[in-house]
Image (cartoon, rainbow, N blue to C red; front, side, top):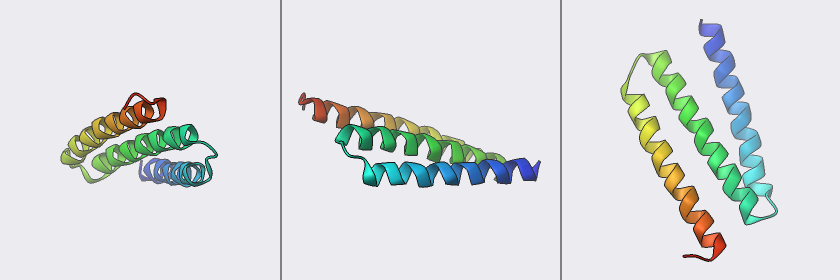
Length: 85
């Protein structure tokens, strides 16, 4: 089971690298917003995997709060780019 966990964490790190590249290189603000949302999702998945690996349920709570704050942040950025803010 630990091999599956290591592979999953390695894939998440790979996704973080590609997401960070898109966030930095993104030609438009929309691309950067989508990359930020993707990075948030990957970090939440990583926190859930760490919660499973360490057997600590508190990490799931942190992941849920981070997911909600990330969602609100993306909505605020999208509204700003739309000109509604």
